Image (cartoon, rainbow, N blue to C red):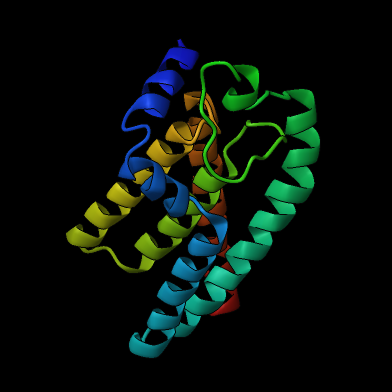
Length: 178
């Protein structure tokens, strides 16, 4: 069933501008610049929480790297190694973007996107920001499926881990800045 979902999204808009959008939307340099600029804008324009947000984003990046890349990738990925869809189904799934060959479980792109979104939403609770964040998260999920990098359960696991990283960063930053 998961393969069919990946196949559907992978071929949806294949060969069109959707491919370019999906590639750049989940391109790591774009994401680093995007989130850094948001944190910088908060630092410049938000006199109340700007410093907390800026340094919280830095803290979140460190937390993500330590937990996700150093711990989870060594434990979960080795215990539950799962080939990425474009590798497992090389004859039918068209890969787009950087061709990672590590385990597709869980989605790191989704984890960091949801973590940063959760952290920002803690400070900015306006309805229109929620709408923008939900759209951003859905576009990231679409991109990871369209690019042939993840299965739906990889994305769901990334969302769950991302919520954890986001809330952990909120708790730590509250203690640091109290």
